[in-house]
Length: 218
Ligand code: DC
Image (cartoon, rainbow, N blue to C red):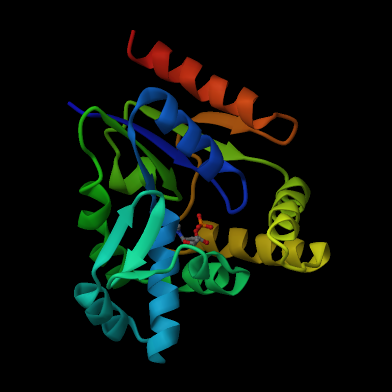
């Protein structure tokens, strides 16, 4: 049995930062499943495929060579780490992520990340669909206002201009889409620990997850 920690939650909640730090501390692998939906959106846009063309998107995914190495993301040997992080890509990712064939095409790829000694996976359906056997499930969230502020700070630090009200609107819209879709919606599972990071630092959030993990393997 390989230990999996599934961290699900809405966009810009900080789950990626927390999941990465937990993985580092435990020496586990890390899966950023959102990056796969962002890659799908990015490559579709480049090829002129719309978010409505489910079978073309599926065919495209069968032909892509996706690699995560040295903290970077490559598609067909091209570095895309930064390009897939844009707000536009996030919104489009949320749209293609509602398609059944897209989710199916990405399923085995995601499960392939589960290797010894363990995995920390973050996304929307890690605990419900991809790794239902996870030893620890966490639903990590924060208020929409705090999430918009965190995303704003991230963009400004990267030298990208941003408007906080637009970011808040995008977050609310993405939450609604990710939580109400038919295919693998973001839900708070009954067996998941609830972690509201609105008033917590990254360190406090990481140590809470590690505490739950150590409890779960006792
Ligand atoms: O976590 P993120 O913001 O990088 O994810 C981008 C979009 O991808 C998100 O709005 C919904 C989708 N997604 C998903 O449907 N399932 C996942 N496991 C991860 C992301």
